[in-house]
Image (cartoon, rainbow, N blue to C red; front, side, top):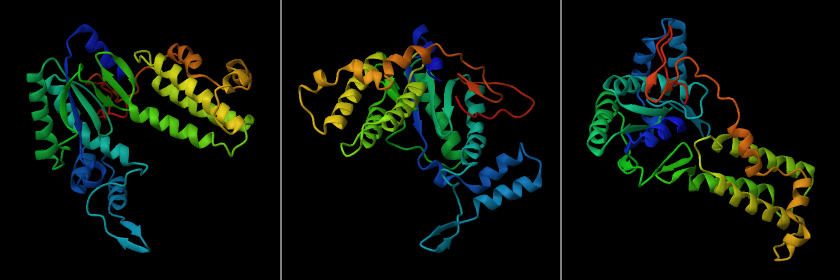
Length: 294
């Protein structure tokens, strides 16, 4: 996903982006639409009946069962798959018109050469989403932006200055670390291992080759070491850095984002799986292509 956006920006052919957001997608998607599109690729009536029962099973609140007339349970096992089957129709329309786009479940962006093309792409998206699927685009979150303005997508912030973690992603990382480094906790091997899992997960996701996150990671490493010192001495003081130097923290086994970044960026990139969309071009297989991730 990041590679597709970065390539277009480097060659200078992509200057505007349609940043679209479907309002309450999982809560408002029509059951009839799901079943109609699912029936195009699934011929087994037993499977169709099972999916329909899943959609209409209802929800339990305060001991009472309420019927569900639309929507699919967000967080349900097959909800992302059903979302991809429905929005696969949008994929084909965008690809057939020649637009480059990237979509993951109900989050997607359309990459355009100029604002005029972006307005045409947005009009097509509105036709498919609002008129044909009877869903709604969020009026405030759906917009046309340039790379100079920047935009957020899948936890990244893309702009003319580079690709970095968006502010919410940084705050989410810090929130997890704060929970694990409370002063009431002991600084032991288990605490270090829990922190390492957070560090690994963050670097594995945000440490893609295109991302310019080295400075961000260095700042987070410094902040994380400060939290370690607070955890050990149960307070903050200017001499803590001399009492517990970086080399001693490293010997404790704490991983650093900057140290993991080169390792992650050298990892082997796996080939696309069947049905995956790359830069708005569907990968053809014997089955109808469905976007299962980017």
